[in-house]
Length: 328
Image: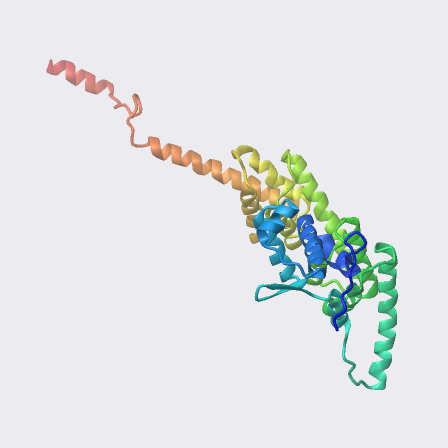
């Protein structure tokens, strides 16, 4: 016997997993979400449809449908089997990601791990309440735990990482990891390292603002221009009063570029000039030598051209004129 349930579409529902809403939807193209929900509806009823038909129903371009299916496959929401598309069980998928095999450890290791986990769990709970209104997706717990191990951040630094990204309105995993990678490359581990970094960060930002103002740029600096400024400040140790000397040099140069400014500042650094007085003395001597060399070149260029009156006249004495008269 075969029993078949009949329910009119008027009374049926298509369930969208909360995991999809919290983990995938925020970073997904809105048209891709549209394709996902409609295909989820079709899979429930075991319906067959072509890309052209799907494009017509959803009023999307055919290429958009293809891009959506490729994206859904790339993030593991669907898989292709011959001509069939199979939807993944997102709940089961996330549970498998969260599952970890237990390993044996010594009592000392277990005690340390237990105490460490208490601090981590307290921090993760605070992050959940402060930035996710208590509704943080389950996979974030394991991700944050792995970030503790990967970056070696202390608990207050991990909380500060989320606070920073939240203030920037970029509370997504890709951006958080990008910031975490940057902090890790700066050697940040604890709150003292972080405070020092933020002081330097604020200093660099103020110098960037002053450069934009002095050059009267009607735009923000590009990523490459910011890299130059960070090198001048963090690597060379120059303050804005020194950088401004290089900016003033651009007044005599048409369309000066940051490469030109960098060549000036890098020259000072290569000559181990550190203070404003040393650089000003060097610049004064540089311009003096340049002016002197220019004058010499001008004289040398004019040296081979005879000029009227530019010779020594012969001198004649009285005896010469008397002898000349007698001869006549």
